[in-house]
Image (cartoon, rainbow, N blue to C red; front, side, top):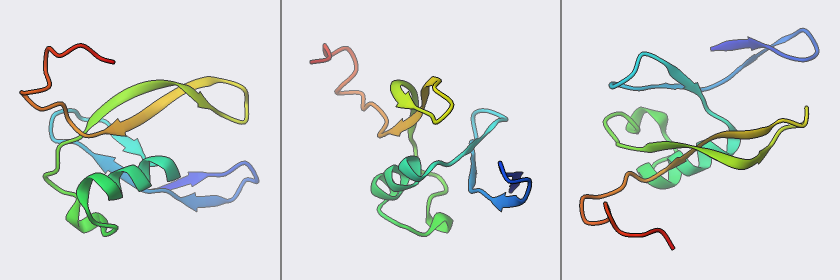
Length: 86
């Protein structure tokens, strides 16, 4: 997709879409590298059908000073559910 940049020009951004929700997610550089790691492929054509978990990371900082942002992690397995977080 194309988005209007700060300079008034347009820039292309990668957007991933999900089967369980109607919204898409504009992929930041950090999330791109995380998706690449989780899926085992830098090719976005190979990302389809992979499960991920989205979460709010309150440590994300933006240039405008706001905090928090969407991050991606591997889904929690049935074995891990219910275990205390360390």
